[in-house]
Image 1 (cartoon, rainbow, N blue to C red):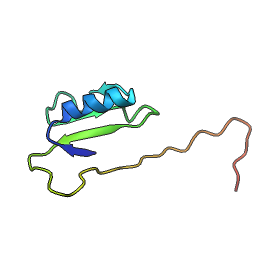
Image 2: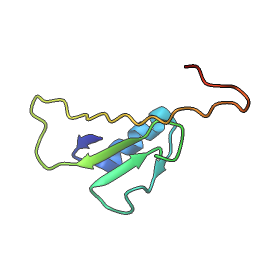
Image 3: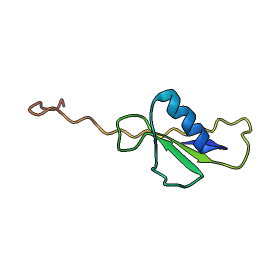
Image 4: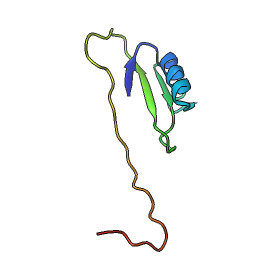
Amino acid sequence: MIDCANPTRLASFWSAILGIPATAEHGEHPGWATIGSRFDSRPRLTFQRVTEPKIGKVRIHLARSHRPPARPAGRPGRG
């Protein structure tokens, strides 16, 4: 999640840079914007509107979600 003053504008910027389309995971809420999807294999970035100005602190919160890849059929796992 990235705190910012203008979520839609920042999402549009990163969407163009990364080639990841904007999604509607937060509906039409003006305080949120997302590129990518939790249901996609590409990275997802969510932008949240905050009213206070940035003062020195980096306002990027990274959350990692990992689903283990499926094992090919007939291949036992290592253990």
